[in-house]
Length: 193
Image 1 (cartoon, rainbow, N blue to C red):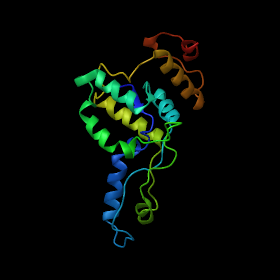
Image 2 (cartoon, rainbow, N blue to C red):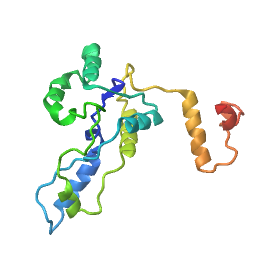
Image 3 (tube, helix red, strand yellow):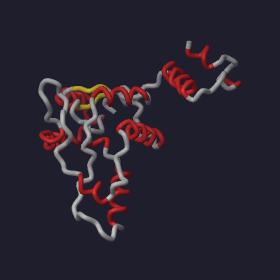
């Protein structure tokens, strides 16, 4: 909603609840497990560049900013911001979530949480890619109308959408694609040039 994110928040959003639920169900059905305690969090860090690049690919305008700038953005919107009520929680968890290398404002190492137990008991499980999680989250929010009209993150650029569709068709070796008849008789190639 805000159009930005704290640079160092690069793990928690990429821990999908459906994967966690699947892990819980599967491990609870194991007859002989090695462990009885599990930390279910994807500790892999995602770079600011990756987040911005993936978001742009689905039409989201997100930029990484300092925690202080993120907080000011939320406060400036006041009650319109869905995150305003979470600022006290963000301050409480700040040493764990937002404390980063001061030079790069990026977390260099995975989050300091031991997650090996779940993968020792369920070696076939893995976390989906960050890009896949962002895409699925975006589709989920769109299908449920969760992006508000005043969102600073969502933008639709018809030219970018057409270029993306044309690239997709080329990658799939679709020969001579054309627009539907109701859209006119121009070819897709003509539409993006």
